[in-house]
Length: 319
Image (cartoon, rainbow, N blue to C red; front, side, top):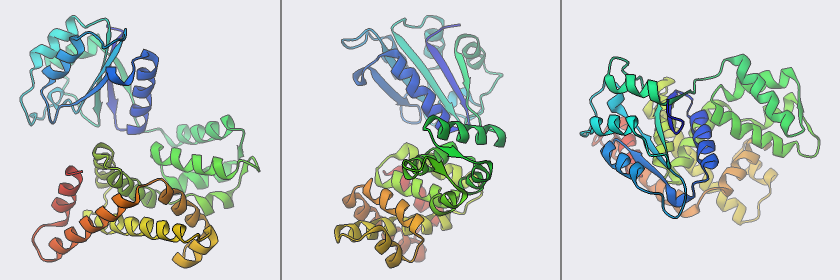
């Protein structure tokens, strides 16, 4: 088994990203020596050639391979040089850490390449936590930050935020910031500040669109589809989230306070807090641009020029 080849599998994107970032940090490779290859766009041989190349003014480098569909039963969109990949596995470069990110992919265990990969790579499984593990994670995060939270508040948090760790991380950070002086989180704090999972996911989707982060936008979108959400509803909710963010930015420019914004938008003070924090984190010009793009898409859908699912997916792929 090689100590510098990692295989990540599972459906918990947050954990995969967190652990990959830790490997990158521990490698001491700088930003010029960390490269990512999306195999929906390039041949795996490009990544292998990079992995074999000497690091640039550094002792180590990291090469990350995403969407390795050649490891599954699905036929890749483009030709993949599997033999070059296997050859590298048998003789990896000592100065390169190779990471295979197989997020949400079902590997075909019958394939020779998969069998060899299992023998050589360090396997990291990142699956959804059980409810008990999830609640324990919440408690530990608050304790690490010196904040107490009771069982009822944790249960309320779980019911509102769902079991998506990325959502939970964002919502716990918000509560930690809010409780920095009291050092305690109550049930009322959770009810007032934690946005329900669906709303949080929609904000994550719209923010990823605004930030032009195609990878994150597609991941959030696909997870919402897997959860049974309707593309028509997602289009409508995402468009509304964009308009809300833009309106809050305008109100902040006019020096509106949190309570003023809550009253103006007819939302709770807790949601106003979240809307303000969110609006401050995004670029106003990008919000304006995508509001127009969503309006154009809505027009085409209503005129029957394109269906909502195809239209929204085209928009996401064009980011």
